[in-house]
Image 1 (cartoon, rainbow, N blue to C red):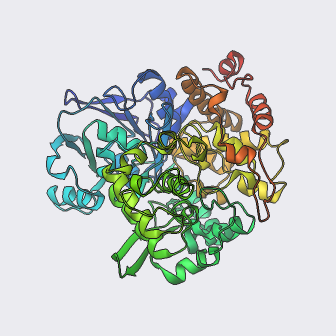
Image 2 (image 1 turned 90 degrees about the vertical axis):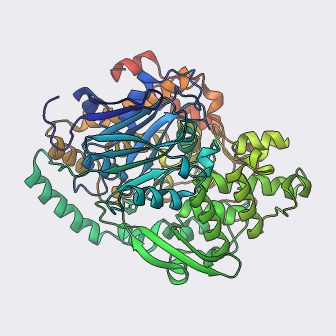
Image 3 (image 1 turned 180 degrees about the vertical axis):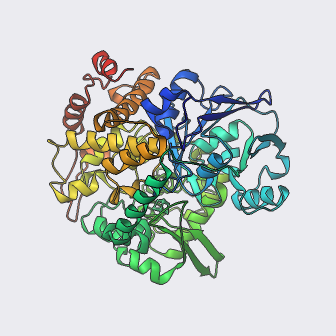
Length: 600
Ligand code: SF4
């Protein structure tokens, strides 16, 4: 491959069945057609993992890919994607993780890491530049996230620059909401990457790298980045995020009446005024943190002293964690919300999915569909913080009712005989925005390739500025947002960089970093190509329009109170318009002409 500046074009492929580790070149075409991250991961999955693969079999792969700017000072260029076939959706999924893990892989000399096969016994991977070892992890199996990360670092000499991504008991137990957790607090979350890693008997990946990353036009890029940092320092949205993290959104979303409350049966929470960004900072935040090369630094470390649980110390909570473990379970007390997040973090469970699953079980309990006999004596009512925590512990260990809940909220609700109470699309729960209050989110959740994931096209901001209840006339905006997010995820940026960095900035950084020339039109085409390749993978998995579904609650049950009162969603109407805008047929399949126009 020609010299592409910051891109080194090296892929480390590790087969856990054979124990082989080889280094391959990444073809230049991957960078020009898919960039990296989610886009290039999709290409590799499409080519290497047949669609009939059992997600928890040794034939599935974990495809870690950095963006082309990873390891440079490009603002927020720290997101690494892992792409895999999801045990939650049985289709494609890319999960993104910030922090320092992606850049560290780059410093070790690799843009990508593919894990394939399955080890016979628990192992971890140790990557130190050219040295790659598969090491025994028997003594870490069963250990939680901090114990594993700290134990492995100590075993490797205690160097603070070693970055570890690992699974907890949830991943070992093949819980479909298990994450891979990097550096203790940053997750590859949502559709089950941790379960795939657990199925391979891979407990952790530890990396330390010492190699330089040199942009193609280093001087020009340094100047350009300096100007961008100045803009971030003066940007009001970036400042709100810096002060209050993503929790800065609580007040606005609650006031507009679409903050998930009690399993999405309400859109406003009565205790929201105690859970705002300023309240969080005043009551629980003890430290600010940041990912690699970030001009915002939105991370918050929070702490409560609890009589019941002792010192509870977490990074976060993020807005979505707060929403799903808090109001969506009827809980407004920091003590329980933080402890619930800690249980998830220690065990390696996705907080959004965990909160959605427990809130479904709480509604089943309140309606008498499940009883104390099912819960093992736990009074699983909305608002019972102790019950939330006890159930989460059971989910991580797959004990009693926790074994059912660990199969995901869709399967669990079906087993309880109440499938209509599972708020999901393709088996994955929505984030904390009720789509009845921002209807473009209905299309986002329904058409997301990895289940109801909000970051596929977070349209809330644009919708709040316009008519958030409109069901027509939004398809072009949703498509544009999906393309922009596919670009951000493939370039490896944190989405918050969009406060300042629009497509023109991203294109300029790509050119300065790699030395590649590209027009804005070509740049956009990459985003659209990624969306269509993901879609085609899922079509090949057997997914059709019927899988672009939403729960009956969103479609038929009008919001009862608040500023979103009376709203339901005409999803069919919105899908027809969106499919036409995307160049997909009535069944949601990309047409041959559309695929051909994208070179697919
Ligand atoms: S804005 Fe927050 S999540 Fe994004 S890169 Fe910065 S610290 Fe990380």
